[in-house]
Length: 609
Image (cartoon, rainbow, N blue to C red; front, side):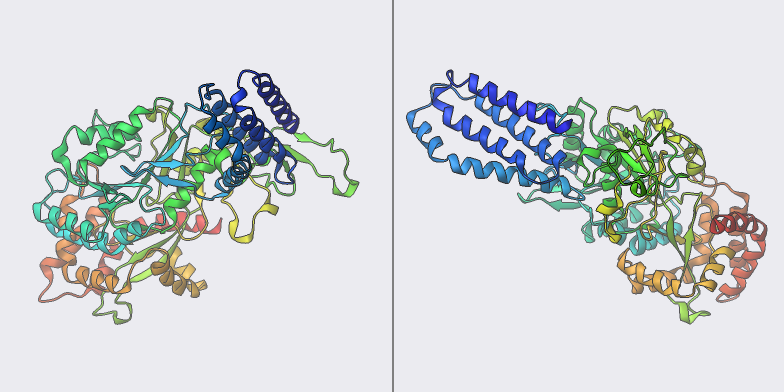
């Protein structure tokens, strides 16, 4: 049907071109050559759907160009057109091949020179795109929190700067999608001046603040904003009246209205980004928000992967693979296909043993969706004096089937969708709330984004789509969390029983995780040694200030956290020249035994599943 429709369109175009022949004598040869060059490609033995779509686009563009030609063209121009007929024909073929290559590109991003807005295949229009509508773009924000509502806890801030420098910064700066997202670090407006200066200098020295474009002009890639408000927020977060969660324009407008709050980054780049986004009234852009705390890190390919998956789910016509409209039962995992509607058993023209039941798959993109990381690493401190074999700390695996960890939590939404209608979910409630039968109705999607496995190699497998509004990133280890006395919640500053059991049963996994720390996060071993030693020397002061920082606005207020931190403070008062961190940790473990036991039970259930 599609082929027949395209051929009919081509025939109609040719007829219209012929009718205009008498009115455009000066351009007859040019019009005919373009029409024939385009129509001649229909017979090529390539992918019918993508090829015919490209042919229609090319023919449509050629006809529009022809309409603009007037009779006042000189004979010299006419002669040049006639002479270059062969060149036009070859150029038409090259344009078609380039369009195919663009469609097959896995992450087809293009940066604007003046700001961090991301453009997707600007030169290619979908069959349903009007010429006056620019193609939709991905606009991706990475939000990081640092010392919000804790401006004068200097010892705690210095410790967190160590973690930022060792774990967070290298993993962000070495992202394969660096330059295709905007990194916004939000800190207290009254942050201690010494800490503020050190933070900005660190980012500048690492080359994370600005980047020169091809014209030699600088554009901002990261900002440090003095604000205690956040835009990637959970349900339990108290918001200021002026904050609209997941609202990119609102965030930019709020920062620009108080330029003194921009501690680092080019305000001119931010204004240009705001102007460009606000000028697009069609609401076709896709906005992505990813959360990363200052003491955690992301796999260096995480942001690129999230962007490619945003194209997969929100802009399927631009994705590298084509969604199956009829899914054979052998491919489909019935427990995942929550949107199945019917079976089609009337398969004609196949051998009896080859016949399969088919599920009809009608895919509708969502209005919003969530992603979170499923496989992660926890990095723990050790005492290099009492444990010289682990001067760089220790690592343990984190495997969650039903809980999202905070690093890497991502929300995507359409530009035309009201950000206030996106559900704000605590990280431990995301999966339980969104993963339910026919859960796709929550975000307005139908069907599955599923592809023919015959078209994919072993290394090209996609994360499974279960038809809901939450996607787990399971391809590789996605995030690393630091578990230290700087943590706001404090739960999990020591490995739990489940983590230790995994390592006991699979001892080789430890070497694999250490290898991944450099390969996938660009975290250097010597930096971990230095950070581990710094914490061993200042652990009491850090814990004391963290105890004072508990229960401030936007931070955890668990009694277990305060009790554990108080033990550090008590030990500080009892120490008599130096300290024994092994004894300290033993005391801390006794206090948190009941709390950890409950968490272990839940983790064991996750691991068993």
